[in-house]
View 1: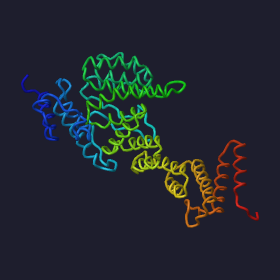
View 2 (view 1 turned 90 degrees about the horizontal axis):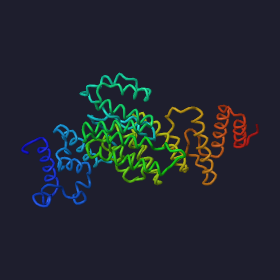
View 3 (view 1 turned 45 degrees about the vertical axis):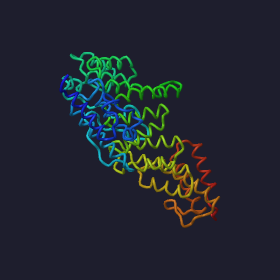
View 4 (view 1 turned 135 degrees about the vertical axis):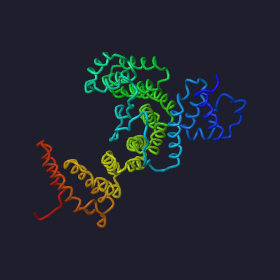
Length: 412
């Protein structure tokens, strides 16, 4: 075929392989292929690098990167992952992605609509027309999209997303078929199918955990295609981690959450919450707390991370844990009733610890000394405060009774 962009990209991939490891047989046994991933330590240690080289050296030129600029962008992303792998702290810098917006999740859960959104293609002739359509009602949006003068990728992607929002698989599949008819290698088709599968999680009535796991497996198979096509992007890693977590592959999920956590500051919060869920699921409370501690103070997710941290420490229940739990929420802006409920729970547990192990008058829970009388007075105060905020007369009476019962003896 002679020189071409595809052949140059192939050459770059082979050169990277030869320069990276002792590539025995590259002129004989592996003259037109790569050795198995498991036999090459750099591939095992950095799977993103393997996927980059594998796509460069794909036997079918159509499976390779389309342009050198595409390759350059992904190489930079892979380099960032490789460098980050040697770090033991969350990323502090973020990188611009040409194809994904940053994630928006600020809580301990992660749903399909909180994953990074695809960036719009400014070269699409229908982009302005699609952007002016109402998006609040997916059904109305779908109806409007049927009147498009041209079914370009932006029109099809808008249709797919509308279908995912209202649970209309036929809309999604119609859009995906349109994308693949235009370009059989368009990875956005797999992205939309992955989002569709994730959107099915939790929709079965009654709750069907097997169905949720099956949806996670289906999502993972589609999202793995996106990861392989874009080895330098973090968004597919985060989405794949979520799919693996739902599908029951906790170890794989943790690895991808950790990679996102180390590589890009925009992904630290959702990745940290993912690590929290996975570690807590296997009973690693210390690991879960460490993950929550990594959410930066400047993040909108930081207050929620501190609250979850406090709850974990409170459940563990030792006096040192309870002290740290109170400290975790001391600067949070909480609803007065929520704070009182939390404080009452902490004082109840502390009182049990003091009864069992003795007083620690040199220690404090916030402003309360760890003595029986001090804890009982603080607990009485919280019970009465909760009673004042409780509209239910029976519950209010019960809280007042508990306040009277815990109150220290006095002459009044």
